[in-house]
Amino acid sequence: MDTKSIKQANSQRALDAFNRCIKSGLYECIQNHMRHINNMDMTVLFNNVLNMNNHILCMKIINILYKIETKDMFLGMYLDKLIKLFLDSDIQKEHTIQSYTEVINACNMKVLNNNFKNTIKNITLEQFHNLSSVININDYFKEFTLYGSMDLITFINNTGYRYKESTIINFIIDILNNNDNINFDILKWIVDNYKDYVNKNLIYFINNIKNFSENNNSYIIIDYIFYLMKITNQDIFKILKKIIYNGNDILFCYMSIKYLSKIKDFNYFEYACLFSNPNSDINSHIIGLAYIRTELNVQKLDDIFFKLCKYKIFSSIKWFTTFLSGRYKMNSNNEPYVMETGSIKPIISPFYMDKKCALTQHIDKSDCCVCYENNDVMIQLNCHTSHTVCSVCFETAFNIKPSCPLCRANVNMSECIIIL
Image (cartoon, rainbow, N blue to C red; front, side, top):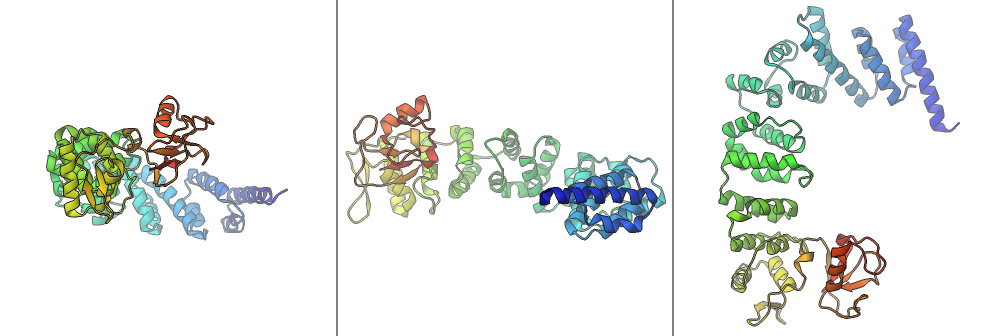
């Protein structure tokens, strides 16, 4: 037998011996056997003990555990069971309350927080009053009542208690990321009573959404908050400014789709340029995303370019001189200028501007493997370094199937290199 099998067999024998001690009432012997039981069997063991409703045995097992994380887990399991029994019972006997109090006193704040937060989600106001006879509902625990019912929140609010800003922020972020059952009455109450907190942290809420593109309810909640806040164009620009500076292209796309009709194209693209992250590289694509979602004439582009030059926003200037190099140039002294007769046709088509490709510049470029010509823009595919194709051939092939036109391997655009 291998080592893993031997340990499993020893754990099973120790578990059997433990159960025999329990049946015989020999509680003083259980410690000798518990140290040989693995974590999985230990969880099974404790669930069995919980079902016995033997408080003395439960506490004895918990007290002889030497691993803090295991002790916390079992205390949490036991406390959860006790509180559920307590809340479901019509009559709370004195000795029962003493048992709950003993378990609560043995718990650290982490265990109590997790348990109380989960308990409060489905508790009635009457049950909350009963629970307060076991747990001291001080200001620390009152924070968690925000996760309860509207009746409970109203009761806490009527006592004169005011939730902390951090609690409001964490609650909204929680429902944005775990929004199976959204209570919009509570959300409305928060905005009505804590509007200053919500308005102050709008950007923070949006930037802390996980999997924003996959979580449809996040859009609903954000839209609802915007609706309640009666968000203005000035607010939208403020949010766009932060999103652009942070380089968050998913949120930028969301704001673009939702609010582009309220923003003039010129201002919209200007924001993407003027507030581009100065530390972002040329292919961060925030400006590119704004470009392909707006219709800009030469005059507008020139106005923006001159403003960029005036304020020395080099990351955006570089975008112009790289992607619209037919009109916007850098002279021998590395200073930007405009060719009055130059074209504003992008050197790379909008097809590539929202794809995170690496960029490089080469003096000598290989011919396209498909048409055997050397286009202004060549793309080195991720399947093989020798598979270099021009943008025209690649775009044609990619629109049919996202694969290499030579070897038919799948192409990952983020691993391709655009050679300018």
